[in-house]
Image (tube, rainbow, N blue to C red; front, side, top):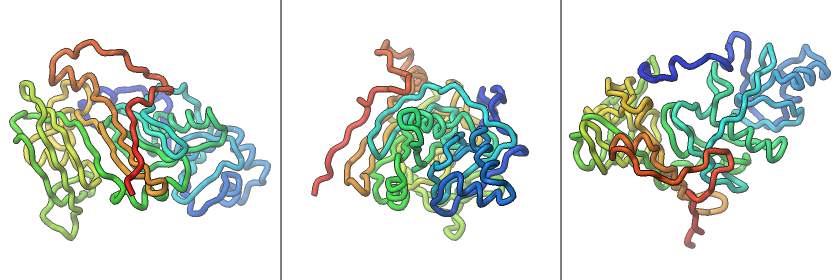
Length: 333
């Protein structure tokens, strides 16, 4: 989290104290009741059921009271000493939904999935609550993630088959991952390709290295589409999915994403990081559908680069957001 981000001072209400929880990783397909009976052998089945019904159990940070809730490999089950507090659902725009996938426009400042402390305010929990409100017991699965401070297209799978197929073939089926990035200073070249090896230090910070044995190749293409004052708006396409890739590679050439003081000291004129995942193109490995999911440019981006934005039609902000931002076509054979 950036020290110049206003949310550093947000309320701690709803945060989970890790000292009063314990998280277990699932390694095989089972149900919630059977899994808890295995990890709590000293408890009777009646007591285990009482723990579930008392809302002291969460899967992926989402509380559930369903005994036969399905669990799969890599799921994380959290046990809490006290009932996990329910939260009022936060409106979040849905870009597209079908039987296999659901895509949202994740706001900046929202975690994709639960962390050690933050269990409630996550995109995963919000979408899970929406899905389960339509079909009790239904669930979603993580396919990919966005950094907390990055907004834009985030896709979840609605069944385990789709999740496994997408994760196994992600680098092959994804055709484009495009971002809007606002950087400073504005005198960046009109377009370019960045190829670096990225490694991670002991503090989890990513850095550029010339050592291929410890680094992973990162490839990023960018094009400057507008500038105003000391800020430039870039259209960025990444060909590898390394952690903090865009921020590190642009910062390495002396052009820093605004609001991101982890890899430099840029200004923070819009109160958030200037990075937005606006398009994700991929082929469903099972159905062979071509997906092109887009999220509109945030208004604060437009205002900073183009001046006060012209009046636009008010976009829905509820969970029942229009799907007009999505299109797909049958793959040619």
